[in-house]
View 1 (tube, rainbow, N blue to C red):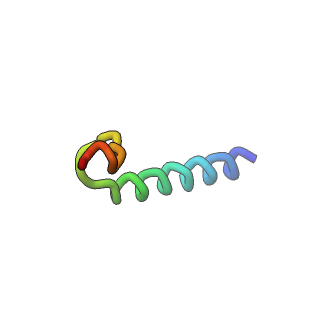
View 2: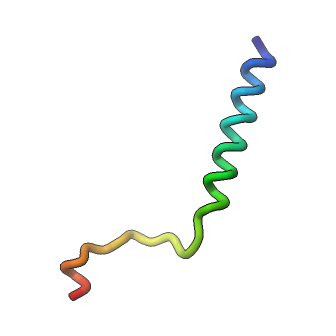
View 3: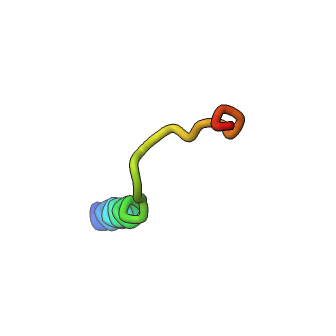
Length: 37
């Protein structure tokens, strides 16, 4: 039971790390296209 929980936690951590590595650039709220014109 404990090994299963540990494995699940490890997989979730690895997935979060891999998705985080793909993010580039500054964090910002995208504005509507109508405001940019």
